[in-house]
Figure: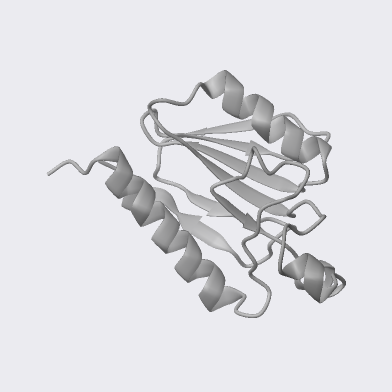
Length: 145
């Protein structure tokens, strides 16, 4: 039975959260960014050392820093071009690794500052956190229809 887009998105969010909590229990922080609060990613991660430099007040509101790593999920109503511009905005503000996942087209766009976007076709792949999130991997096979 084919799962709905929202069901596959929920599966991805659960896998991502579980993976981050298991691999990096004291480093995983999902927060919105003040400057880009109208453009929050679906998931984000900030290096523990950067998080700990914030004041308590900053941690309890919108933290004034850009996540090191973000994930954006494209839904049917999203424009790919708009999401690509959003990803570039994050990279321009200090994000070091960004994944744009198009579930319907089964494509992943891997974005890093000063590098060409890498396009991965199909969900028979294991995404890596690379040097930004060493040891983190996300198996996209769960998202296949």
